Amino acid sequence: MLWFLCARTLQMQALLQIWKLLKPEQALELLDYSYPDNYVRSFAVRCLRQMSDEELSLYLLQLVQALKHESFLDCDLVKFLLERALKNRHIGHQMFWLLRCEMQVAALSVKFGLILEAYCHGAPDHREALLKQAEALFKLRALGNQIHESSKKKDSREKMVATMREHMSKEAFRATFRNLCSPLDPCHVFSQIKPELCRFMDSKMKPLWLVFENSDAVAEDIAIIFKHGDDLRQDMLTLQMIRIMDKLWKDEGYDFRMIPYQCLSTDQNVGLIEVVRNASTIANIQKLHNSSATSAFKKGSLFAWIKEHNKTQESLRRAVENFTLSCAGYCVATYVLGVADRHSDNIMIKANGELFHIDYGHILGKFKEKFGIKRERVPFVLTHDFVHVITHGHRRKATAFNRFQEYCERAFLILRRQGSLMISLFAMMLTTGMPELTSEKDLDYLRDALVLDYSEADALAHFRAKFEEALNNSWTTSINWFAHNISKDNK
Image 1 (cartoon, rainbow, N blue to C red):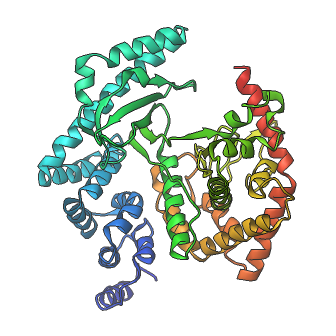
Image 2: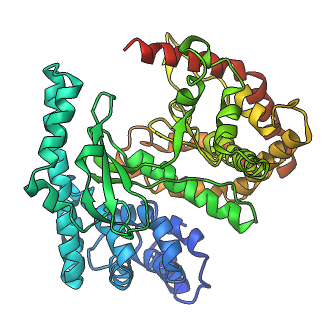
Image 3: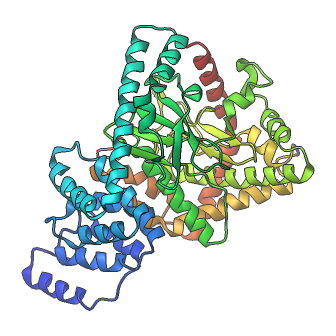
């Protein structure tokens, strides 16, 4: 379409008034920076009105970014989002924090501030809850700064934890967290904070590990990680894509037991991450029965750990099935998204056998290098440990392993059929300033991984070659895990 030709533009604008509505997923692309025409954008919003609240919530991350490309504040997209947010508090909560996160950008502060003001005026009860959440985050940020400064002074860990818990025990601090809706998920309400269970983690920025008593008396405590100093927007995007993949697979009848835990960026380099309970990292599991030097090369550790947590034959069978399905889902998801830095502390397993990945700081094939050599040389992680669990400790070419490979192939083909949607969603995030998503070239990884220019038969053959590459070169992953364990122990 040659938009600079007035006659053609007028003709297109007239046609849009009678055009058959597109599927909402197809219409999303019409809201990125490539389509500034107001008639086109209004048509896209009319298509979006078909979305359920659940579907809207799934794509809200991109829709908030699309607001940047609107020429005027008084536009159909702003009205649509405000209307749906005021009707559904969960969407309102999500929209509030997505807008609030970008308020430090000077070019957006007025526009986004006015939208936030309009929402808060329309939902005064929710406004009070959101203000209380903002106050709680401010206090956590101040506490995080205090701990970070103490670490620079080389204070002992015991002293820093004691100081942190003493600060949390003060009434002024505790009062802020009483009956507080979780910013991560407004369905969860904190009864109170539990200072005696809170601590900080050992990584560079000293994230806070926070534990809250659940207002639901029969539910377990809620654990959250507060991070200050890390940009969590990339994690948010990756986890959103995993949720979308999970939906696409379930629509086709496949439940790969995915765990797209909650993650929320609340301000510049500030955010929250959900703690998945009853789970342990592969590194910790492997070291339970082996030393750091040998743990990466012992294939029986994971299966032994799963057996310890699943005593009966039936529960063990279910746990191995959970592991098989989740491993297949994450093999395909991490391959398609190009997730890097997959060391053994970034992959976890729940007691029920479900495997999941964490920490998505490197995506779209941005693999780490040392001395010009890529540290990760496989398309995705499929180690001898994983195969040992999938096959119940039997030969890798057993029926169970063939079924696992078939799961991977079906999962890949389902995603490939929706490749244009996935690329559009990433394209709509190009203006965020994420370090690994800055230009159209970054989207080439997705196109190459999904081989969209191949026939389905050729694409399947391509994926099978990648599968064999991951399996045959799994020894390189073990070496990387060994190096990671040694490096961590020497810190």
